[in-house]
Length: 319
Image 1 (cartoon, rainbow, N blue to C red):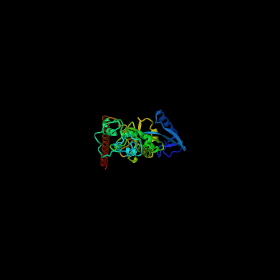
Image 2 (image 1 turned 180 degrees about the vertical axis):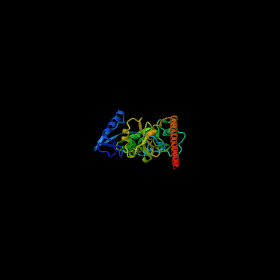
Image 3 (image 1 turned 60 degrees about the vertical axis):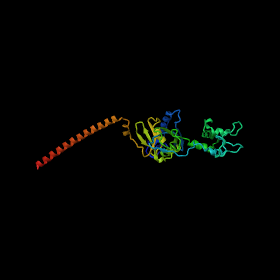
Image 4 (image 1 turned 90 degrees about the vertical axis):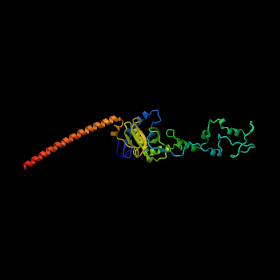
């Protein structure tokens, strides 16, 4: 790696670091071999002499506090009244007709004793009065959703496709709009090697329509050993993923709160996975070593003190 600005033969890792293009391409080849036959293979191209890599980046949820989803949800069915006004077909029952062809008023009471015949106009009314006899296999909303793809405008279809994402199957509703994603559950976003950490965060939050701002979160590289490193705002997460290897058992990228996440250096991480009895034994051994050092220094100090006192007595006698 190089610490100064990256020339055309180098690819930037951050504002102050870069890597040789040939070395990165070798790592990319290994990465794609690991994901052979899967959708996580990365593609690369040259743009004005610069190497650009693009593809899917896996990000795991590591949040401790709930997040808020935006209220707009394109999956919610459109109001049925609006569709009837627009002249669209509907599976709702038509308004019952009174005898004589006039529509029944909402407040009026229908006659209770009518002769049943095939030509009687009260048949729809009697069916509406006895809902248990209806075939309730589909709701009104289901009928509307089933017909919707046929009458959507191209712009509306594209907008729905762009926003139809969920976090572990969760879409917005007014009761569960504030929730915490399952820890360790994985999502992915399509990014390229020129996108910084802040840009990737913004893209991820926009994909899931999260109301919280990107400044509230941070990306961390969490190793199997427990070591945790925060990606700086100027770093490129996709490049970092390639540098840490393709296996997510060794290292994963987590989305965490900016104020709750903390870095764990390698020297500390090597003790994280030990059981408490083992850690207690380490502490006991350190305490024993500390006591030995204290005794050694105390004895050395006493010996020096005795030597100095003897020398002082010799100087007094000589005078």
